[in-house]
Length: 294
Image (tube, rainbow, N blue to C red; front, side):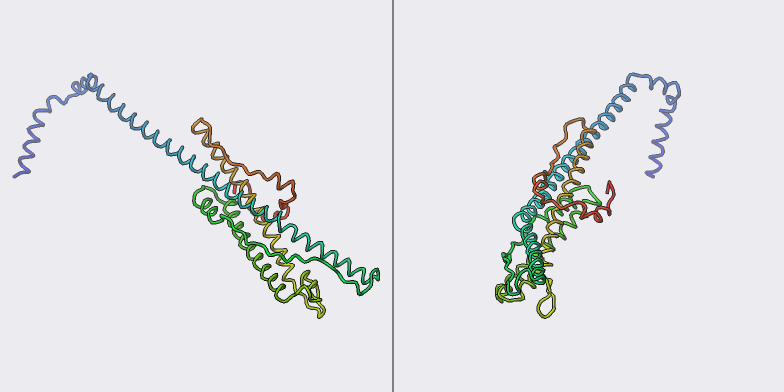
């Protein structure tokens, strides 16, 4: 019953309106001031909404670029602080530890040569000063750096590998430092420096019975090597992050025609001049794993 009433209502409405739904009336309506005003209002509303949307999107992109630049700058400073700490460790302890061990070993070889050649008497002892000073374990904001690079930056390839390699280098460095500290404590407890075989133990040479113990010299070599690894990886990470930041700044300038936030730069000139920086040639195989753009 209700359906019949509705149908009857639509039929009556059509009967009333149909005489006016002609082409001439439609044409006249489209040319009317009312229609023109209606279309203008709709167009204006659409243009306003589109412009507003564009402004929102543009601000979002600007905010995202600014945020990533700031995060990149933070990551650069974290990496630089780590490398600077390792450079300080190398300068104050590790470099002298390694050089003194190598130098004393050469002096021992020269002493043995003179003994065998008869230049000095057989009863002349070889005197050297063993470095039995323990080293502190290193502490770095490595976990903060990992989260910053892996979770806050849109980087991939080499920078991510550098962070992973840096984490591993620091872990191995601390493990080697801890092992050397244990050996030193053992030397002191057993009064090893008074043992005639101590020079052989200290330098990793054959003892009186012919056996060789390389534990101590290998540990020192490891400390030196892992310190250089940490310096190299953190230094290169600073460079890669700086390039990433500059790319972001270039994109910022192109999009917004304004001055982009400043990108941090790490200065290693003093370390270079002091001979503390490891050579890139020592890491040529690692560097070959990545091509430009990774």
